[in-house]
Length: 143
Image 1: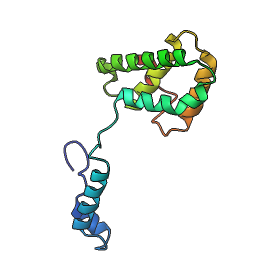
Image 2: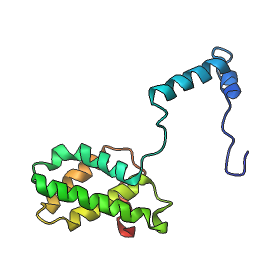
Image 3: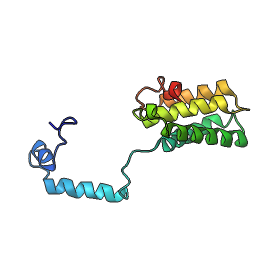
Image 4: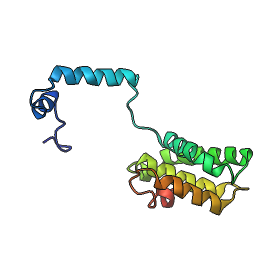
């Protein structure tokens, strides 16, 4: 074990687990093909990227509750909330999805002209379809 937790399995470990059906060279070749397909974009999303993705999924459900200018104001408020979260050391240990959800909920409260109850209901339905750590215990209290 390393100081930070269990050691990461090596390609040789995987070769042994596969009982020789796949070689370490095959594994490395496959990993490179995947990375090339992803254009080496393998980093975790930022808080704002996560919030934007959640809003994109929720948009079709929320469109019936808000007009375009209110939607744009909501998105701006969410992005502002996520920018504030970057500066908060208290939120550094939270998952990006938790911070994004908190930012969205705070922005809904801040945005005027929005059907608050309807938007929240639609957001919760969308969030329940994601596999988040705990969407009901968000970073909202910390933002």
